[in-house]
Image (cartoon, rainbow, N blue to C red):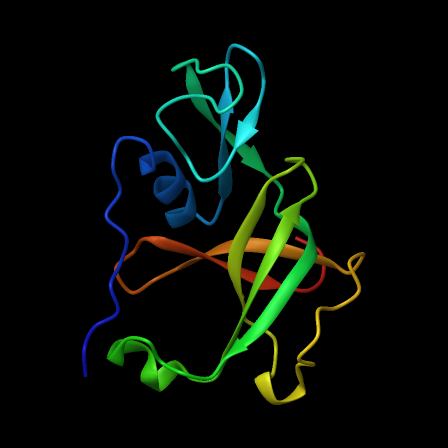
Amino acid sequence: MTDKQVPVPDRYTAFYWENAALGRLAVQACEECGHVQFPPDAVCESCQSQSLTAQPVTGRATLYAMTVIRQAFHPAWTDSLPYVIAQVQLDDAPGIRIQTNIVQADPADTAPVPPHPAERKYVSPTRMASGSGKSALRTGSP
């Protein structure tokens, strides 16, 4: 079996992975105009400033779309099949949608259509075997 690849942080994404390893979720915020963005980038998407900082977010989110993954596109994921992934919009970071696993979902019970857009979820980073973090979605409160 092949090991699952883990992200390699760079100078733009290191803050995200450091926070995730501590169980916190953070996005990038511009110190000049206040714009928040994800994924992290070298400059602000709004004003092109390079003055960017990490901004913690609660992880409360609205489920935007989801699907069940039934085919492994890399041999390392074969043992994880099937699993559910989703795109969620963060409540306290308007306009930011992130991709995440839904860890409490039974793929057999998951409808093949998107859920009601107002369904609230909570996104929290979880530790990977390497100690780095990945986002995982769970229902309920923080």
